[in-house]
Image 1 (cartoon, rainbow, N blue to C red):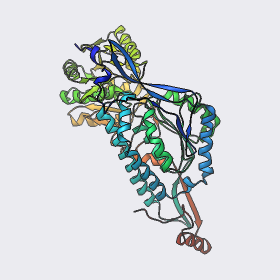
Image 2 (cartoon, rainbow, N blue to C red; image 1 turned 180 degrees about the vertical axis):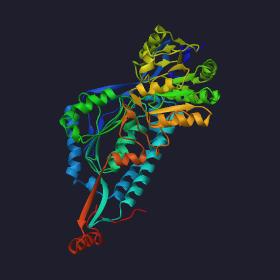
Image 3 (cartoon, helix red, strand yellow; image 1 turned 120 degrees about the vertical axis):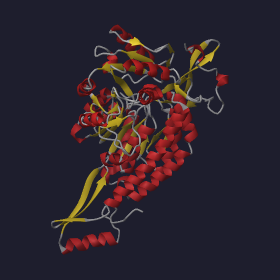
Image 4 (cartoon, rainbow, N blue to C red; image 1 turned 90 degrees about the horizontal axis):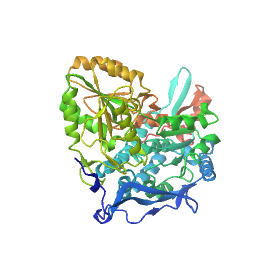
Length: 538
C-alpha cells in the first residue's frame, strides 16, 4: 500500500539548488527584435507540485506571463511579414552559411541557460530531473543535427544541372510566415523540432509557447533577440482564441506548425480563409498498441511496456496506449507487469530515480478517474494495488484488465498513467484494431519467431509509420522519420524531412545559348547572387 499523504514536500525540504524561491513575473515578450514591456493582464502559473504546510496542501505558484490579445498578435504578424518582405527580406535572402552562423550563435547562448530551463521543466510540467536534462541536451543535439543536414542539402544543391538544352540550379526556398505551437509534454524539444527547421530554412516565425511550460522559454528570449534579425522570430503569449485563432483568420500565415490535438488543429486550419495556400506541419494524437505474441520473451516485453506506457506518466504521443497480450500468456504477463510497476519510484521530479510524478493538467486526475469508472462499468478491473489512487495532482498508475471495445479507454488517447490490457486469441484481432483506429503512428511487436514477425511487418508498415520489434515506441533518434498516418500527423518532423517540409524546391533555369551562359558565368564568378551560386559549405 502506498501512502500519498507524504508525497508532497514541505518548502524547507526542497533542495536549495532546485527550489524556485521567487516567482518569475514575466513582463516582456519578443516583438520586432525588441523585448516589449507588458503592463496588461497576466496568467498565473502554478506547478503540479503542491507544498505541504500544517497538514494542508497548496499548489506552488511559479510566476506569471503576459496575456496578449488580438492587437499584439497582429503586430507580431506584421513584424514577421515585414522581416520576410515577400521573400526579399534579409533573412530569406541570406546565404545558408550565414543563417547557420546565426543558429550556431543562438545555440551557444541557449546552452548558457541549461540549468534554469531544466529547473523550470521540472517545476512547470513535473518532468523528472533526468528526463528534463535529457530533453535540453537532446534539443541541442537536434539543432546541430539540423545544421549538419542543411549543410549536406546545400552541398548537393551547389551544382548546376543540365537536361536537354536547359541549365538549372535547384535549391530549397522558404515559405513565409510560420505560426509555431508546440506541446506541453515536450515544450522545448518538440517545439524546437518545429521552430529550428522553420527558421534555418529562411522562414519568419510567430511562436506561441504551449499551455504548460511557458516560463521556461523566458530565459531564451534574449538569445532569440540577439541572434536573429529583427522580426524573424516573435514570441507571443495568451489564450488561443485571442492570438493563434485571430492570426489564422487574418490569412497572413503561410505555414501552420503544431503539435497537439487534432480537434484544435482542425479548428485552426479551417479558420484560414485560403486553406489551399496553407502548408501544415502537424504532430497529433496516437493510440500506439503493443502486441505481445505467445512466444515473446515476457520479461523483455514487460520491461519495455512499463517504460513505454509510463515514462513521464504516459504523457507522450509515442507512449504505448494499449497492450494486446496473447491469451495463453496474459495471466503471467499481467503478474510480472504489476510486479515491475510496483518497483517504480514515485515522488517529486528532482528526487533521484523517480519515474511517476505529479500531472501538470489540473483536470487530468478527474479524467483518469472517469476512464477507470467507465472501464469498471463494462467489466474491467484494476489489477494493481492502489491503481488510480489520487491526491491532488498525483495519480498512481492504474492497470486495467480485461479491456474491451465498450470502454472509453479502448478508443481514447488517455495521455496519462492508465494502462489498458487486452487479451487476444488470434493476431488478426490487434491488427483489426489498428485498421479500425483513427490513428496510425507506431506499434510495438514482441516475439521470437522470425517467420511470424516477418508476416506481421508487411501489413503493419501500411497501418503505421514505425514498427518497433521487441522495443517500445519512441521518437528517437531524431534523424529517423517521425510521422504518422490517418489523424496522427501531417508532414514529418525528422531532421532531414523537416528541412524539406518547411521549404519548397525553387529553381533558376536558362536555355543553353551563349548569351545566357555568359550572364550566368558572370553572376557565379563575381558572386552577384546568393541563390544562383556554386559556393560549397565545408
